[in-house]
Image (cartoon, rainbow, N blue to C red; front, side, top):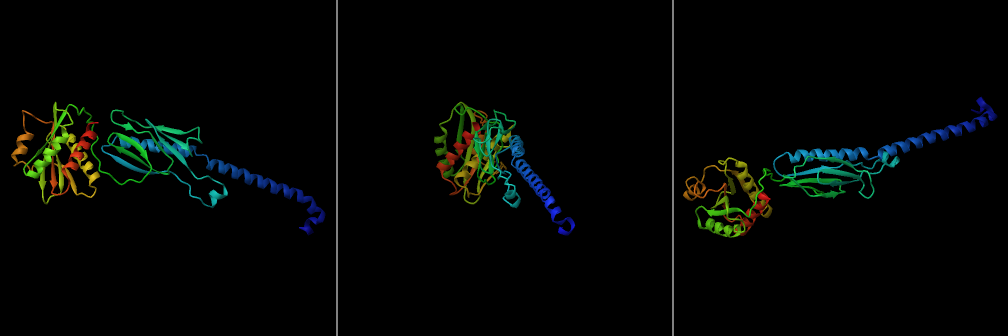
Length: 308
């Protein structure tokens, strides 16, 4: 370059070279600031998560049964690009409110402009538990009528019918009746003392009890009534309550299969026209599986959830 320009020519070019370097640096800085600003603008992800959670909740609320949905929020793993452009890790605070999700950048204290998305809720069918989390791994819970937001991993759960069965239990009468052996009758007597807390006006449900030394504990539900889902729902709720106390129990829930049609106590009482119940279930207890106290408590908890 000295031969081409000479010493004087090089001195003349130096200011232009410095200026070009400055311009290039300014462009690089501008691009870096621009890219960093775009990358750190969380509006898109706030809109995405609020809409995604709301639409997922719509699907949950239009489906039968209970649900635990595990959901992972978008995260940016640190890498050379994020470090070079100083891109902040994504962090959100999610609020579940009465009929919408609100998503804040980092937290409600740091963000005045959250993104929200409503979901369709029928107040007669769903009670929303207002909740929030800043965890990147969250769960949506639908248990009976309750909808809530959590932040821990959940395993699949037994799903029960979600038909509306709200009722005033102070008017409804529930009765337990042993079918044959003395143990089943003792179960029935104890459970009846617990069921006395409810009403005595409307004959609602009859619980038949029997014991078996070999077969697993089984809850049968009535399929002959006009709305068999009601009996099915109660059988399912009782099974779920029992499993909360005895998670390792082998317990079966299924429609009645005529296996007790030869039992006169069963046939006479389920068809009693003078004192009819709206529906019935049969609980066949495997010997030694569950105590009368725990079974009674499971039935009461199922009744309270069924009619709330």
